[in-house]
Image 1 (cartoon, rainbow over the protein chains, first blue to last red):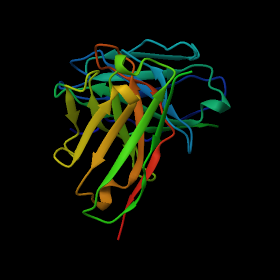
Image 2 (image 1 turned 60 degrees about the horizontal axis):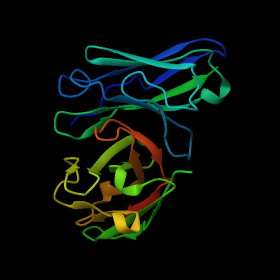
Image 3 (image 1 turned 180 degrees about the horizontal axis):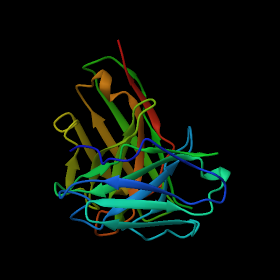
Length: 110
Length: 121
């Protein structure tokens, strides 16, 4: 199972919006609404931001939103803040009853 | 509060074995599927394995199939990962994560802090 494709890096200024893409195949993103997104700060465990394509767990800021179209899922961070600087990963359930993560995106707040 | 705490990491020679444990608390352990996810130094996340509520369904990443075995003891609220025939490329921080999707497997809602496994001679 190949990793989902994400841009290596995305940057933005405070207050701006940025979008991270996550491209898969018909065996994962394209066939299931079980796409999730995670934030990871250096040296820390990942944190769930989005599940089931666009649902936010309680406690996650509504500045984080997500969607999916075809084989590509997207995470948008609105009103970018310094604390949003981190690595972001998407994940999808697959047709093999396994999971696959994205390659990861480093977000830099300028 | 919900917690999962990994233990058992360490340094092992290539070809050796290691058993990781993950203790859950703050939730009804037997009501949740559980996963292992790993992260090699400086690299991205890699899903490793999942086990169902009762342990009757298990699935593995191709990279560990046949070498790693996931299991659980619901009476002790503990998840395990038996790792055999270890290779240098298995060097990583191993995370235990709770399945957030209930009866459907969809996401990882609570993560431990991880335990480091180093495979080196």
